[in-house]
Image (cartoon, rainbow, N blue to C red; front, side, top):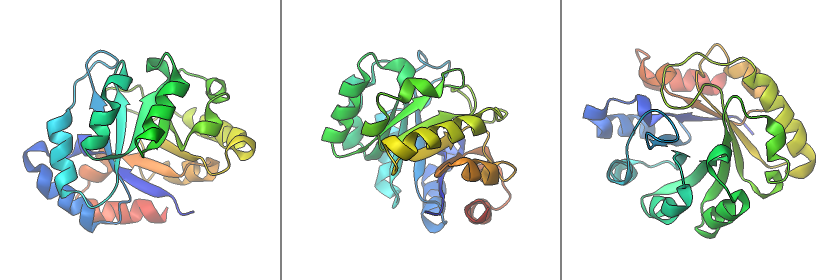
Length: 216
C-alpha cells in the first residue's frame, strides 16, 4: 500500500477554513487529520463539535479525528455524528481501553490508539489485535510546529514487527514534525499514514507539497 497523507487542519487558516478544506479536497491528500484538544490532557485547546461539523460539511475525504482529551468515552457517539471516520484515543487517557476501542468500532468507525513519545510500544501488545490503527506521537502533543523526535522511527519499526504476527493489516500513523526530510525513513520503518501540518500549510503551494509528500 502506498502511504497516505493526512494534512492536519490544526495548521490551516481558521479565517479561511472552507477554502483550505476545499484545497485539501482537490489535492492528493487521503484523509483530513483533526486534532481535538481539551486543555486538560494536553496544554492547549483546539476546537470542538461545531468546527468539526463545519469541516465535515465541506470535506470529501475521511475525517481522521485524534482525541487528545480526558474521558473520551463520553463523546465518542457525538464525534461519529459530527463526521468522524477514524477515532483515535490516547492510551494514556483511557482506563478501560478495550471497552473504548469496542465502543468506537460499534459506532462503525475505524479505531485507533495513540501513544505519547515517552510511552513504550510494549503497552500495546494486549490491544494490538483489536485495532485498526496505532498513532505514534513524534512530538509531545498539544502544539503544532514542534521538532520531530528521532526515536519515533524505532518505535514505528517495533510496532510493525509486533503487528506482523498480531495484526498484519494494522495501519501505523505518525504525527508531529513530519515533512519531506523524514517521510521516506518513516515509510521504510513501516509507517502507513503521515500527518503533516506545517509542512503542508506553511508551504508556498500546499497542493504541490502534498503531491511531493505522496511521492517520497
